[in-house]
Length: 424
Image (cartoon, rainbow, N blue to C red; front, side):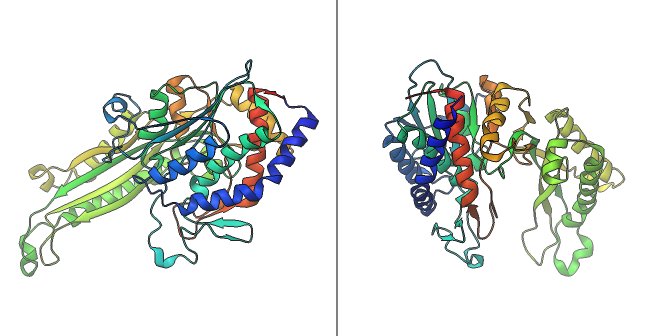
């Protein structure tokens, strides 16, 4: 544990460097590191780590290798030009190792016309830094870097090994990013991911699955629509049944740590529907794509069975489906719930450290979306997520709250000292 005088020294250094950290974050936001286009951002982050004296490895994932893992989520993108950054600082000896992780990829800022600021500008207004990816999650990457930098600039060296990871494609499930890093052999005694957690300690997230329902109709000219069978209309009872299932699951299930965050244990969301080929033709097909979240105690197989049963019941009295059956496909996100035990040494230590900044330990909570922390359990690496707040993630005028960023940077700096130990 860092002594009080050492603690004050670290915190003062974090404050002293914060203007520089803000400029760094602004520069990072200006780099358009969309999913699939992370290369330039990775070079920038790697160079910043190199300046701290860290050993840098930039490696390209091998799809054939990561596809073999049960946590792999398929994506269509290829990997050349999209490396992960692994920056390592060898420990002085005798301490625990730690990975501080964050993802460089961001989602599209479209529609650009609705933004009131430049989404790639990294502009600071009223203690907020605006731009796509500012809080999700380039602020976390900045916090990881400047937390370690604060210690080093105080003349301190961690006793345990420190690894900073900047990963790709988290927004598509993380297979080529954090999972690939683990499969590359990068493990530690603890993993902290500085996702925007609103300064709560995230220790769980729901299971997530995507599925697609396709129904067929019979095409006809619109002027003779009564001679056709409209696939859009045939989809309606399925939509209503899935909506009812969502409400039923929300009432029936319990997931306290996520309910504290969202007011709901889980959600079944109808995300996209496509149908037909021509406005003047009766729709011959319709496809509905959905995302279902599920709670600890439920499995992927249980969810699949419940969705199948719900849809089957919705159309069982319609003879049309005996002639042309519906089809259900499961695709994309496919993960069980992740739970880090709240009494794990990592969680308890992080709570102890965070009390020094917040007065009391931040609330233990659950994320409603998937986190890369879930990969830790496959590699015997305790994991949690803790990061700065902001607003409009994936939305218009996204921003990171700079006061929150400073608090998180300070917390991470002290946690490195407490978890890994330091040598002057």
